Image (cartoon, rainbow, N blue to C red; front, side):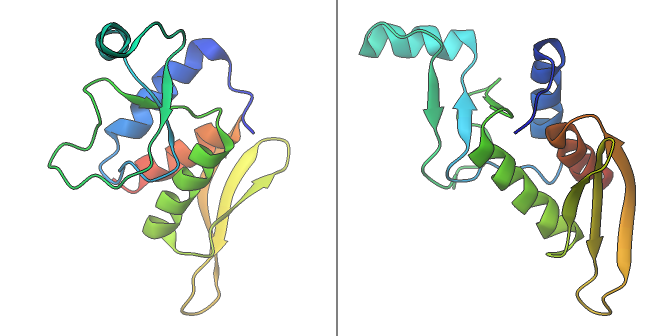
Length: 136
């Protein structure tokens, strides 16, 4: 699980959603923006720190449940989905190596050759977002 400093976490979550290869996946923990939270609270009752798990696939043209929605990159299931997105781009052999930082490495399925994306980050979430950004 990431230990991303909270002041950088929101920016990292926004970077993830801004990636061309980003999409919402079932099981991701969704953080709604204050405007959507206020609307849902007024309609459904009082909530604090409102979060909802995405349990459906988006079929609409919009890739966000609400504008400004972010994934919770402290949630283990959301990190697993982010890893799945990275593997869709770079191949199923991609893995993270925690070795004085988080490195994104892998193996190409065709020839088994090792690939290193040159990504080293301080947290798992940051490494995964950087790998998704590198696929732009």
